[in-house]
Structure formats: C-alpha cells, structure tokens
Image (cartoon, rainbow, N blue to C red):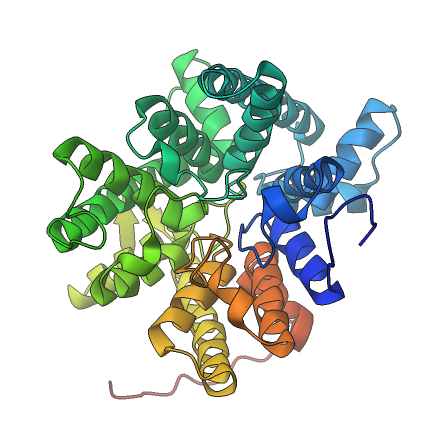
Length: 418
C-alpha cells in the first residue's frame, strides 16, 4: 500500500490479493505487475514469492542457524513437517542443503534467462527480468514482468525449456532432488518409493496434459490452429507443465475449448509433489488413491507398488484429502457462480487454479486474471482458497475442526453392504 510501491490508485483488497497470491506462490493477478507496481513494489512481490516458496518456518529457522542460535525441539518438529522430512536426524544439515540447492538452481536459471532477455533489452533490465522470472518459476509462482506473460516467447526454445524445467525442479520437492543427487553420487543404493511415485506421476501428468492439449486444440483456430507444428508442440509442453503447478502461459487460456478447460481442473487440483514449492493435493496423494482403487477393484485387501507395500492409513488419507479438497473447490465455485453471475466453467477453472496455487486463468478480457472481474467478497473467497491450497488441505481442515483425541475404545465391527 506504500505510495513508493505502486503507480496510481491501489485498493486495500487488491493489495491483500496480490500479497496473498505472491506468498502462496499462486500467480493470479488483479493488478498488472509491470505497470501497476514500481520496481520497489515488484521487489516486494519477489521477496514474498521467495519466502512463500521456502515456507515461513524454513526461512526463519535457516536465519537462526546462520546466527548459530539453538533450535528447540518444537521448532524442529514444525520444520520437519514444513520440509516433509522423514525424521529428526540430520534435519539442520538437510535445511542447509535445501538453501544451497535453491541458490544454485535459481542462479543458473537467472543466468540463462538474463542472457536470453539481454538480446531484447538493456543488460540491467535483462538482469532484473532474469532474476525475477527464475525465482518466480522455481517457486512455481507464475508472476511475470511481461504484460502478456510469456506469450511473446511462444516459439523461443530457450524460454520454453528454461522456465518449465525450473518449474518442474521446484515442484518435485527438495527430498526428491536430494535423493536423486545422492543416488547419482552412489551415496544411496535405492531410490525410495516416494521419489519413484513423484517422478512417475510428474512425467505421466505432463505427457497426458500435452496429449490432451494437442488432440483437442490442434485445429482450434482460436488457440493452436494458426500455429506451426513446432509451436504447437512447444505451447502444449509449456502449458502442460505450467497449468499443473505454475501460472506462466504462452497461449491465451480463454481460447481453449471447454473440454480442455475442464480437464485442466484435474491437473491443477493435483498440483506438485510434497515438500516442494507447488500446491494442490499433491501427486503422491493422487497416486495412492489410484493405486488403492486399482487393488480394491481387483478384490485385494493390500496394495503395493515398486515391490513395496502401502499402508491402508496412507491410502485412506489420500482419499480424505481428495474428497475434502473437492468439497472446498465445488462449494466455492457454486457460491461464486451464484454471487458473481459469471460462467460456471470459467469460475471452476479460477477456483481450482487458486486452490492448486497454480495461477493460470482464462483472464478478464485483458492482461489480468479472471478474479479481477469478481466483487470484493469474491476476491476474499479466492484469497482463502489460495491460503488453503498453500497451507495444505489436511492442516487447514485440522485448524477448523481440531484434531480428535485417540480413543482407547474399539467397537465391534459392523457389516455394511456396498
């Protein structure tokens, strides 16, 4: 809200929306980032993106470690949950590795993007654009300093490889990246089941997204129809990576068919993997639910994958996360549809994008997100969904309903016909 941070008039609700979108690494905008915010305002947004991607507890604990302060047991427990770290041993060392990895990956991305942007603008501006987009991409935020996002680089191979790979690395999770690195260095002899599921699901979802986009949009004159085969493949790859975890776009999503917009909601709900910078219900939860369904249909009481058994509690938890998340999104969509009197599918797309902290949008007819058309109450609804998606379905629900105390009473089993 500081006059130094923005150009022209900025309403409080729009400032809150922008700050929430940044710290939840979503990317939905109700103000034009390069026009309505000054360099100082853009720096604030970038700082919130970095803090949001890291996680508040992770950033605070790392600062305490650097000042050589003692980390208490409670703080370690919170940090463990924040990073999705499996145990307490080596937690601080893992935190240092996480920060080092983030700096290296973002620095490499910044160099590549800066060199590419330097061909189109002065070096100082290219450096700022390179840093901003590298951090925004790795943290799966989707904020851009270009008014048309990345549509001007639809056929550019460097941009179409650099940004998606930064998004993928950020969305896989720190545990997965570290485990892959240690496996390559022969420090571990086996990749964990979690990492295998995260990698397989990410690859399958990206390829499936590309297939749906190419098959349903190939001849659509509003979207892919006028593009060359090369541009179609690049656009499908870029969109498939970004509409699951980040909010960059090289095509106008308002031109996509209703079928693609509907299918996109499933990808956005899924999001990235645990312990990373992406939101959503997570690839592992969807994988566990699918595996559970498969073995249930086969009539087997136990499920397994990659020669490892899966606990029934994990599978039931995955079912619960998907069910509760679906209720949140559907209820929000119905409320917004009735209050805002706008097309149902466009609102569903926007609410799913907010909950999955994705950031892609069908747009308001200009350069802003569809949320810019909402009333203040509608924007508050989207703000809550972004916070919910970033905090996590389970954690957010426990905040509301509380955690039940474990009962020592076990009732006789009742038989229910399904």
